[in-house]
Image (cartoon, rainbow, N blue to C red):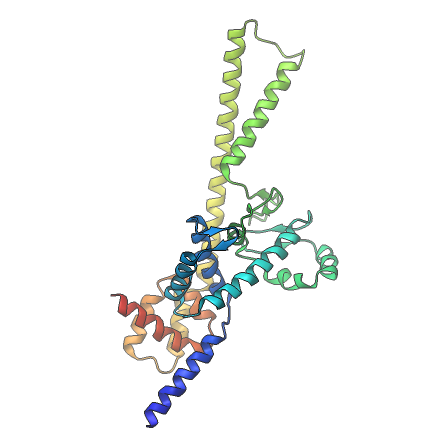
Length: 301
């Protein structure tokens, strides 16, 4: 009888915990990535995810986090993300603000922030926390990542020039257009020597076109290399923040961890996102989360 009462209390506690969806940054990022995947698969129409998409999102969220939150809880978070996207977009539509993809921060001078917050109090938290998933939100809510305004800042302290977060093919197209405009200006310039025959003119135009294309490709490759280096730096900073050593240190301090669970947890910590979730959880939640994730991993074997 006592065992039945204990199980009932445990079940009631689990149900109460489930009813309170406590969102952390890594949990929100997981949800956003699942939604992006469904958008890219074409399962969002008229700004609404279909039933197939929500089933995938719910199942995927459980598999990645071990938290069996229902569709309504995830939909509530979706509504919060929509409002967050609208707020961030409104901020970045102001010419004095920029978004740094590497850190997720929204940057502006202190005076600009203070003036904006006077009129928009809900922007106060974004000043400190930024919006690390803004790129994902742009995809989810059907907006380009920049709208031609939102800029990606480099992490270099030497080069403070903002670089646009546009797809590379678009930039190449812009370079080609600029090259073409320059050719037209040269053709109308009386001081520029003009080809003597139509055939010579066509050959000259083709050469200029190829040169413009080659210059655009070269610049695009250099920018891609710089972006790759920046991403590598951001990944190194992320891994250092949620390291395996930190996870093991906290695991050694936990009570109630037997040898089997200990070594199963080490396997989980090989994944950076699981290390982040573990270190972000409160101490009294970690043991329950570890047991759930390890049990799921064991069932899948």
